[in-house]
Image 1 (cartoon, rainbow over the protein chains, first blue to last red):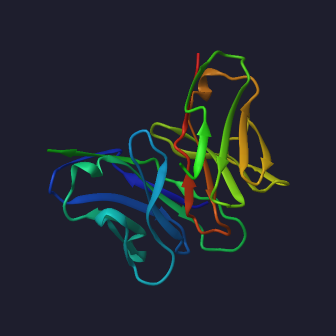
Image 2: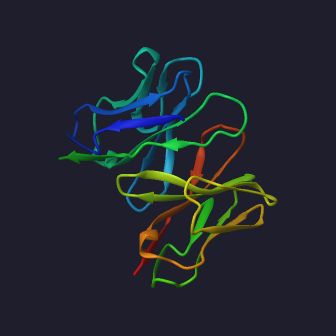
Length: 115
Length: 113
């Protein structure tokens, strides 16, 4: 079964510092990968996704992620953290195969931005 | 107005009570889902539906039931609530197949005492 592992349930960064949230997947075949963000008291919304093609994917609010097959990773980055980035971030995966495939979510990483 | 609307947003109930969480959507999507979110566990799929006549169990369906009343409406029921069903519940929709892009409601926080 597909799975994703998010390293670090809580990450703190200073405002203006680099944001790096880690996600590794387990799959023998490269899956489709996603990052979702959940702001306080809201539902999740899609930040970015990788399906095929370019391995560096750009999303909303200045975030980007790079698919690295050799490392089975899909880490999320942002060069300069803003206070409004404080939220919980979820990595997610679905298999790249036919038929209905369930989205599997990681356990989430809460990002705290320190002024 | 939100594209995916959940009611109620917050509910406190007692053990053994029947609870219904409702979801309606204006996105025109055929696929609808119910997820449960618990701290440290991420989101887990309870039930999903591809259309009014196609309802499927997810990974944690025990203790829950669903009804797809129309393309736009998908409700989740707890027939006899228990404390370990205290959680944040999300309804979501998607355009099939297998895009992985889900559109979430704002959640229904349920507390079972």
